[in-house]
Image (tube, rainbow, N blue to C red; front, side, top):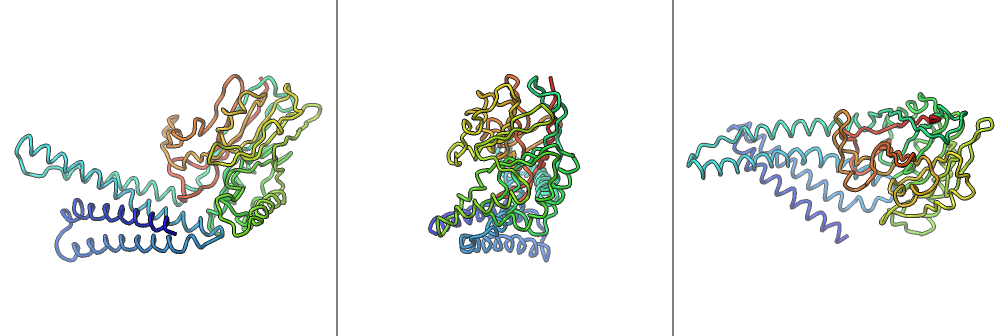
Amino acid sequence: MRSSWFIFTVIIMFLSVIDVSMFKLFIKPTIHRGKMKTFVKDLHWIIYALFVLLFMAYTIFIPRIKGPEMYFWMSRLIAAFTLIYVPKVVVLIFSILGAIRYLITKLITGRRKRKYFIINKLGAYVAMVIFITMFYGFSMGRYDYRVKTVEIYSDKIPQSFDGFKIVHISDFHLGSFGENYPGVKKAVDMVNAQKPDIIAFTGDMVNNFSDEMLPWLEQINRFSAKYAKYSVLGNHDYGHYVKWDDPKQDSLNLLNLKQYQRSCGFDILSNEHRTLKIGKDSITIAGVKNWGLPPFPAYGKLDEALENTDKETFTLLLSHDSNHWDAEVRDTHTDLMLAGHTHAMQMGIEIGNFVWSPAKYLYKRWDGLYEENNKYLYVNRGLGYIAFPGRILQRPEITVIVLRKK
């Protein structure tokens, strides 16, 4: 509780600095006298007061919520905070730059006339664009799915699997959605429209609680593939980010999650593999429990998943965390690994072929297709979100991977 109040105090101090600075540097010099001045000033401080109350409520009540609702309300608070205060910070930065320019000009020329309001206006325009972009990301952008098609070439792909279609999805995080969220049905419809031979889900179906699946079982069950639907577990699926009252609840939560996924037709690969045959030809499909670098759980045992597999047979591996590729997978006879986990940080810039996200500073492989020595890794951005409820210029993704015989 003390740590929560410490964080609360730091946040309120941050908000105070931003709001006082905004008022003195930008709002006060530009608003007109009279009723408009009073309205703008009062509105500014009312918004500040509301955020203080919201953070106080968050600090007191959110830790007491034990179920999926905790993440839903937390994400909404983060969204409101981001929408209001990121544009404010941008305006404040431009205002400070304008003031610095004024001081430098005054020192050099001796002039006192302020000519830096054009910088303030530029800051306001930039802040407006950022606000609109974020608002879209938090509303329709969070389920503005894109379908991305890539082709994998290998001489190990048998003739019967030439043109074989894998639909790769990841990171639903179902507990982040409200009950009226339209994105799940839309995602299922778009996946089924690709007519996949198999569906490969690479983990994080939920944030922590198996019950997050319950409102969506009917929709998840609708995922359709010609041959099979495979999945592995991600770090969030284990429920380790929750302080359970009874250790048995942790095990029961994981057991229920597996049962729910299996009831929807998914074959969960837990350090094991399957052989998929078409006629006389076959490929190997393996999957591991979550493998991650600290602080993420590392239950994946690649040697068990690949045990007794033929090195000459094309091998597909499902593993939640893309770091697994460089740590272990790349030096095995795995031909294609599918991963998720990064979300591409749910924010970034994408202009044509140029793609940037803060995720690149955390993960060596964070988005898209990677190839080394005729071996492939594909990192999917995920369908859902966690923490802040949206996607800012990094659209959620459905990947269609087509196997091609070289």
